[in-house]
Amino acid sequence: MGLDFSTQQLKAVVINCKLEVLHEEAIKFDDLTKYKTSGGCHVRSDGLTVTSPVIMWVEALDILLEKMKGAGVDFSNIKALSGAGQQHGSVYWKDGAAVKLKNLDSTKTLKEQLSGCFSVDDSPIWMDSSTTKQCKQLEAVVGGAQAMADITGSRAYERFTVTQILKLIQTNPDAYKATERISLVSSFGATLFRGAYCNIDESDASGMNLMNIRSRKWEKTVIDACSKDLASKLEDPVPSITVQGAVSQYYVDRYGFNPDCEVVCFTGDNPASLAGMRLADDDIAVSLGSSDVLFLWLREPIARTEGHVFVNPVDTSAYMALLCFKNGSLTREAVRDEHCSKSWDNFVKLMADEPVGNNGFIGLYYTIAEIIPSNVEGCYYFDADDNPVNSLTASQHARAVIEGQFLSRRIHAEDMGFKFGENSRILATGGASNNMTILQVMSNVFGASVYTQDVANSASLGGAMLAMHAVKVTADNISYQERLKDGPEFKLAATPQAGSKEIYDIMAARCRSLEGRVVSDNAAL
Ligand code: ADP
Ligand code: XUL
Image (spheres, rainbow, N blue to C red):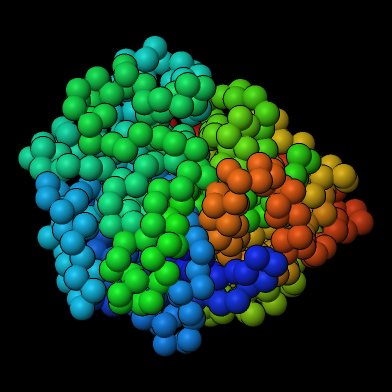
């Protein structure tokens, strides 16, 4: 079984040894209306602080397992489970939580028993951008942004976990003091199933600005700059396919799990997607979920001050490169809701009213503070001569948001060394990869063929596949790629349309300079 504690929902998938999907389930957090989340989170009044109630994730697991049991899933057949979590988010377990976790009562829900177990009720998540001060502070300690990237794989980013932990230490020292363990969303998921604290895996640990990506150890200078006791509140990083031990007796008694079912480390949603898509060397994965994320397999950890290098979850000696754009699906939805009567059907019909290239109009949409380019906010429209315009028609908006997003993804990916070409395969996943019109624009802008998998939730699928690999590999030493070679195939979804390359090559160059203008205008504000 593979789970995915993602931004907007908790998902699960059950597969068999032939890699066939037996069952899929999802619980949308916004459907748990009492938590009043939108898109699974709360954006605070400063517009920068973004959190999710940790107990909502716990309750979603209660509901998910009940639903699966009701649907006839036979948990006694599950040999192993693993999963994914939205990256960077953190969970703060209060003193005494380990004892509660160890003694879970199977007649009660997890929510009933764990509600008092968190020293911070609202977990900071990846959409948070409130820690610029802490980023600067920690970069200064290690010798600057590039030095931080060389050590941890990324310059200090607001959403990266250690900057969030430092903010807690500085603004709410009592809560930090009352914390016995800090989990990532991923290791929190594993901990719930294990009934004991689970390790943070090396791949998701790479999204903390805290682990040395070569030695795979916590970086002492960064630890000491936060608090000398921080390491004692963290479970050490281990390879992503580490078996943590059997599932808690709670799940055996309440849901009929096999007592020998192994819990394998959970990892970040993007590393898990890399596993679920069985990414090969020349592939570029594009995940169109709440965020838009591009990633690829990397042999050597060459880190820059834009983008990230993470430890590879599948091959622990390798790495992965990743670019994350915060204005993904939620921004497309905002345009759909404002200009296209809240319907994807209308959205694609309106897009079709405008030609490839939108007659030169370019739109850059940052409805929330962006990660790339850093901290830019607002929506900006330009005509074919690069003059700013105040508004666009509904059909121009529908086309502009998609073209603008993929043009920007292309220029930043090329800057980081991603190479798009006729031979590269773009593997698309995430909610918006269901939309063929969007995939066609992506193919045109990148000038490469786009493929999709039947299973849209590559992160939960990757979790299930990593679980299967982890419990077998010590006995047979077969590589991940070899074991999973018969996994769900990719199907061709779109190829570049004739003439589009010429149009988008010119627009990509324009987009680069317009984005630069928007960045400097934002900085001047
Ligand atoms: P996450 O895992 O981050 O919660 P998903 O990968 O499940 O996100 O994607 C959810 C998003 O998919 C929604 O925000 C929605 O906007 C988008 N989505 C779903 N169907 C479509 C569609 N047909 N066209 C465009 N976007 C879609
Ligand atoms: C990656 C990132 C997001 C989250 C949520 O760095 O911040 O993709 O993992 O999906």
